Length: 340
Ligand SMILES: Cc1cc2nc3c(=O)[nH]c(=O)nc-3n(C[C@H](O)[C@H](O)[C@H](O)COP(=O)(O)O)c2cc1C
Image 1 (cartoon, rainbow, N blue to C red):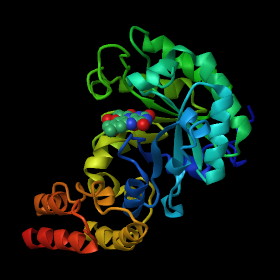
Image 2 (cartoon, protein in one colour):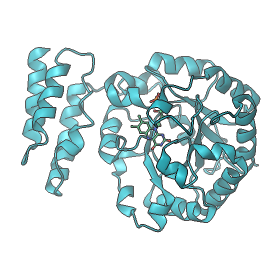
Image 3 (cartoon, rainbow, N blue to C red):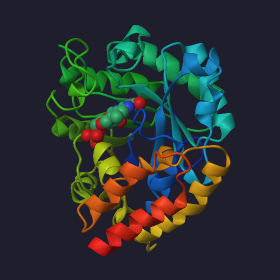
């Protein structure tokens, strides 16, 4: 390996690696294009991930509409699910041709549907296959290919499995990994339980950074705020990925990120973000979309602030109604401001 990233820059100068200091996790049904556009208005710097798109759906099923995104969302990474090197290479190429800044392979998702296709977290058992997949993907695209994984599955010993996985997959050219710091149990737990029940082992991920200093390692799982994220960066990790907390309280998590994590000095406010969403909402409605397809992602914007409940309730009760438009959003904002 040359030690250079695909941009030709050393890995830690690469702008995408810098963006990856903080990322919003891929979340099915949540981090769709509307959610990402909204998050991008809150943080200009954070790396955003799509929901997982399976490579069979992309390559065989023509699910190309799932790839549509707004250029303003950049930097945005496409997450693929799959385990066939040829198909993943095709999927990666389709994604890169659509303009995604990064292609990520999902090796962490435990859902039944994904297991039956033999991909997601079950790939923790097959690092050689993952290496083959990422090598084939990297061959097909010029953007970085990255991996999101767990620390192990079922009765695997993470202390052995994770270093072996990182060594084998990085030997195939991957320089950036995100590790969800808990095992996935492939039998007996629902995907939701698999995000809470297996215990977190942050320490193991920190030790991996010591063992693989050349890799860009992001930690994921249970991070609730920027302070905690910063403490992982201070401890030597290269990035922190936040999922649920970023979704449920986007302003708390992303609102100060540009300043605190990236040293940038953009100023906005939750109310300003609402105003900034209006042209996007209008364009979506003009194209035949519905208001609540966007506003469902905005319910947590005022989380923890006075008037949060009024905002959430007004949108929940009104945004799904036929003909609902920007006036509903402005009325919800009015409710919240009255209460504040
Ligand atoms: C609704 C939901 C959908 C998810 N979908 C995906 C997915 O498509 N791909 C993936 O790698 N992880 C997925 N995850 C897992 C998250 O990316 C993340 O690893 C997990 O939620 C732990 O991070 P957190 O504690 O910060 O939420 C999903 C999580 C949630 C809550």
